[in-house]
Structure formats: C-alpha cells, structure tokens
Image 1 (cartoon, helix red, strand yellow):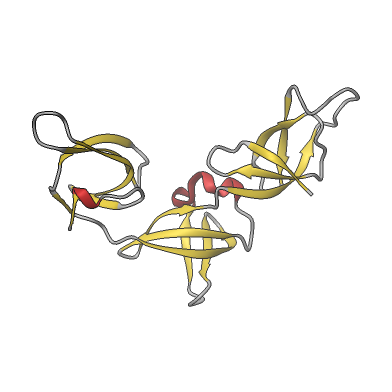
Image 2: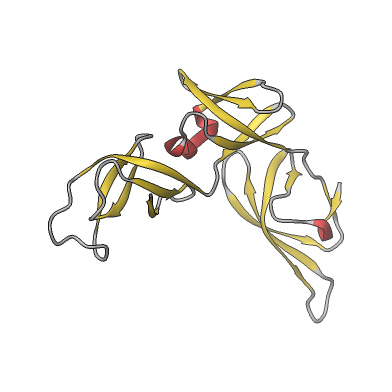
Length: 186
C-alpha cells in the first residue's frame, strides 16, 4: 500500500483487480476545498489510458512488478524466447504480449521484460535501435537530404519512411516507440 502522495511515473497500481501504470500525475491544491491528485493511468495489459482523480493522502494498492533486462534469443513458433543474463533462465513470451516491439527486435538484443506474479506483462525495448535497410527503391539524381521520404524495409521486416537519399545496406537509427527514422549510423 502507498499513499497518493508517494505516486511516481512508472509506478504500477492494482485498482479493482487490474494493473495500471502511472503515466503522469499532478498534485492540485485548490484555493478552497481539499487537495487532490490528478493522474493519467495506462492499463498494463490492454494499453487503455484513463484519467483518474484521487483525494490527497488516500491509500492505493501498489503491484509488485519485476523489471529485468533480458536478451532475446530466437523465435519459437509464435513465441519469443528471452534469457535472463544473470540466471540464464529462459522464458517463452507469446507474440501478443511482445506486440509492436517485435518489429524492431533482433536476435541477441537486450530488452526489459516486466513480470507480475510470474506472468509477463510487457516487453520494453530501448528508445532507439540501429537496424539495416534490406530494401528500398534507389534514389534518383537530385534527391537531397531535404524533401520527401520513401518506404524502406528493415532487416527485421518492419517498414518505415526514410529520406530519399538513403540506399539499401545503410544502417539507420529507428525510434521504437513510433517507428520513425532518427538518422544514419556510420
């Protein structure tokens, strides 16, 4: 149990039997009336975001979520196999739990795996990853760094929009949160 005064971003709460992650919070002390805490909560399993207001000082139940750095080993059917680097334990995580992260996941890549009571909640990649372009249309003379974009297929199979001057075989930095192109990597 924790007080609403102890809330932090990333903290996981157990409300009505569901796990909710605190996206943002704000303590509000109006001129008259009691203080309260305005929060934006994200359901850990479904991803649904809701706004919830608590009276200041109210006790809320926190959930014990274990976040560990794990290494992605390989894909086994529909499951992704991750290994804990300290204990060498391997766990199978269903594709539905991995979600969109699978588009930017390479073998031997590190990711953060969050579990609660032995159940995997989600897999979180670093904010950006470096991937190689396996196919894109060739650029034409006159294509410069400013201007339009073209589709490019990455080594993981994901497709992103890149500037016109990039070619097949170029290594690029990609934002794992929204799949946007961040720059070339030499």
